[in-house]
Image (cartoon, rainbow, N blue to C red; front, side, top):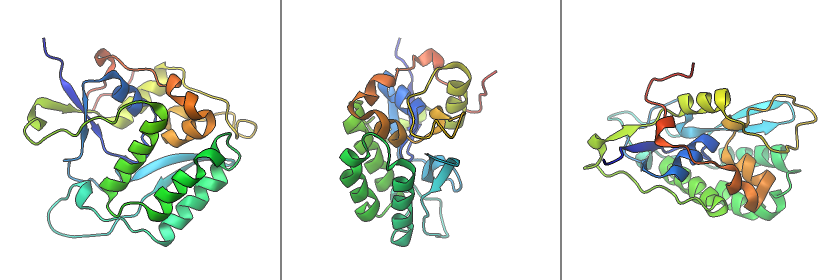
Length: 215
């Protein structure tokens, strides 16, 4: 029996649940979907001393037909500088910040111009440290035979039923840290080369279906 291929959404610094599916195989990266505004496709979560902080990658407003992320331009410049400053404020004390600083600064200060390319660059960067391959892109011909993964439902199921935590620079100020929701850079900046060991593959039986919700 051929296992169904599931489409992982293209998003920046995907959280651990996304990578757990990527590590399990039978997944493809969905670079073809029309970009829906105000979703996790251009957002990721940091942890600061005051609590979680949602970061948004601003994109240019363009009318007309729906577009894929690879056709959606980012608004860089001052937005990128502010985002990089937020990263330094959140994680400057993290154990592996200095080791990864130059790589991350390059992404924020001189990253690709489209949302799709920037998201891919963040995924490739994380992949090199996690030692988890980046899923191949689903093709137009394959699309009808694949199924979309609902990332919010997946993250919720992780929070409800899986242990996900690590020693954190802000644990003295924040008793409740939403580890499963944080962008993967949080895990990497804290654990470095050991981060991949904390990403456990999810079997297909645990894949959440679109619109499903944990009990």
